[in-house]
Length: 573
Image 1 (cartoon, rainbow, N blue to C red):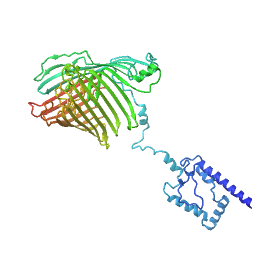
Image 2: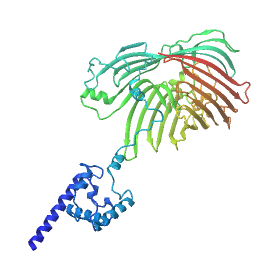
Image 3: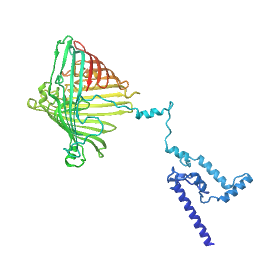
Image 4: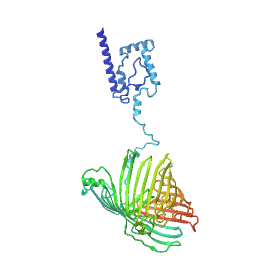
């Protein structure tokens, strides 16, 4: 008897072990055996956690063939079915199963056994819903109906062309196998011609003016190049080739201007690429640099917009886990000639040879926004040797509650100036409302306040710190189009406007602006100024652009107001 009992227990344990293993492999979840509580969650045991949504075999086959410990045999089930048919009543075991199924249905989704159908619904997203009749050709056209957009090509292209594809000839490796030459010369630019009638600070002139911008780009490798920029039919961004045909102050003459000197001429490259080429080893760093007469353009041109003679080097795409910074760039720059700052150094042509410039700027992604920061130092020499002015700037840009985009910019300058005009501070807040047409309908409101004599670090056009506040604060660099006072010297104000871009193929801007002085220091506006401006731009084709501007500016305390009306055609090549 003992031996038989031992064999029965061993057989029973073996059958249970095999059945449990089969259940694990098939990924199905066993019902609790008779005597177990039906309220026990299915995910409480480790067996139920093994592949709960994957079935390797048909679950119906598992349910039909699996025998659970304590379950009735097929013979017993047949006898019970016969008894039920005879009596019309369910057996005790079937009552338990029925009660168990009732409990399963009443259980929460977490405890209820998932069906094969619900498993599939969990794995796949719902099918797309089409509001109109489905057109399969439209889906194909997303990829197959595209056509190439051919922009205007440079009139001169020698060697490797820009933005082209195909099988290229093998490149020279004179700078190393890992920095092959990609030589190419391109000459391109634009030609602007405008007709305007402007009354600007007492000068009433109607004229036709034109300027020609020519870029000469010599590519050497994928990262090294020599670039030059010429403006041959103007002089110093102040005098342009023109014909003054009317107005009280027009001279009725053709005035031709000519200047063959390059406005920029610089070399730029990457020390990392040069290192890879010379050593034959992949560089673990990027270190772009430039030297020569190169453009310095910082904070959208507000803080710096000038071509300086010097050098610069950048540390790009850095990060710091210790500071929690995912991405930042740092650029160091210095200049020893062509340093333009009309408010600090002077506005004469020779004044931009009287100072050195040193500075550093940083671009940082942090605090859910974008940070720009910088420091600069202008050091006078020769007759300006007593000049030493420090410049600080910081800006933070981000979107708030998916409603307003804001950029807050701070500018400060202080130091030693023989004329005592080197101290100033300005705060600018740029805001745009995110509408239901966020890419085309852009209401904006920009505000500022300035104390003392705030100045940009450098500006080759003699513009003030407020040049980007609105269209009423900027000129056209061609016809002498009037603008509101842009110095921010002891003033506050701003611009409120609406920009509409149609289908991203036209631009229409309406704007009102104001400058309100709170102290007369002899630098900025003496009395309040109000401006009303409108601008319209439309491309005629991929090479030609038409633009029209109009402004009327009320100058309190002045003899007469300013106004301007102009139309311009621009040809890109």
